[in-house]
Image (cartoon, rainbow, N blue to C red):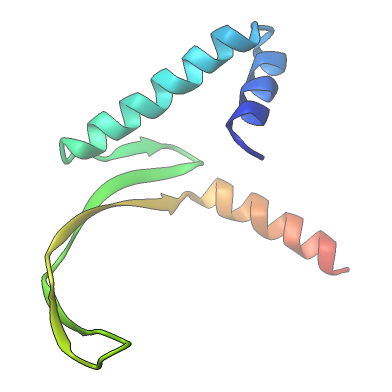
Length: 98
């Protein structure tokens, strides 16, 4: 599923136009990005949480030359699925395996 597919699903479920659903989805994603950028976590109970995590600087190797390089520290987004989401995916996978 891509963004346009998701917009159509939201539009159908919310009885909205595709344009309105697209604006809602954009606003939601923008809000999540802005909050996580500020260092806040966004928790959607049952679905999951978005947060920023810090990765320390470290040494790595250039795979072509074997030369040691310094990899800079970084702040990265992280998504942790909630119990409801994990359970829904697990049930779906269990049904497929039967």
